[in-house]
Length: 262
Image (cartoon, rainbow, N blue to C red; front, side, top):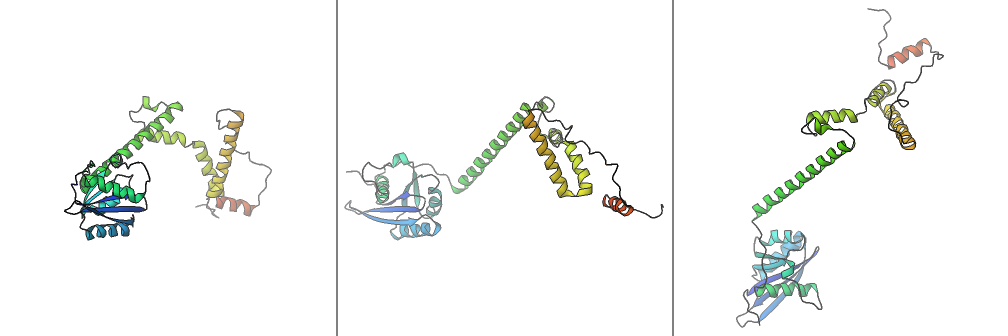
């Protein structure tokens, strides 16, 4: 027979949607009476759980640290109860016919006999600060990983910027990288097409040029060469325009036509 240290306590078996609770109340004759109930793990269910514990004057609660499901329960119950968070290895149930209600009762019995080692839970302020620090460390590691990936991309592309700049992601280095990735010939071709055909048609034309270049690189297994893709179309000298058509063409290209020179 184990000695009972806690005369009124509760064991919680926590799941994603449900919480199974078992209160053990021991009288002066060492006879324990159990009260069991099930609650939703949503906010309304947690409020009902807190009210149910208050009804039986239960201020000692024990539950397993199951994933992240215990956190909202802990945040609600710590206001009115002393909550003990236990590692699952200390609350492992006995083999046999296992149910959620039996698991809650088993946790209650272990906690009642002081057989559970509590986990350290800092104050809410410390928990919030710890979450912020952990998130900052995570973002810092992600940033470092992205910097290393960018450095590796430059290395395999034979761009030795790290031999020239101490920081390959600095302002000067980034401006050079952006310039090299901009493909100036495409930019100039886009401006020329846009001047007389508009933005949308210029974008479609540049995309066609890029697709043609990519197809040739992949099919011929040759490095990209702008020659042949961006050459100017020869002017058809045989094309004849009327005076009205020529004036309309000049106006469309931004020229202002004056009858008499100033």
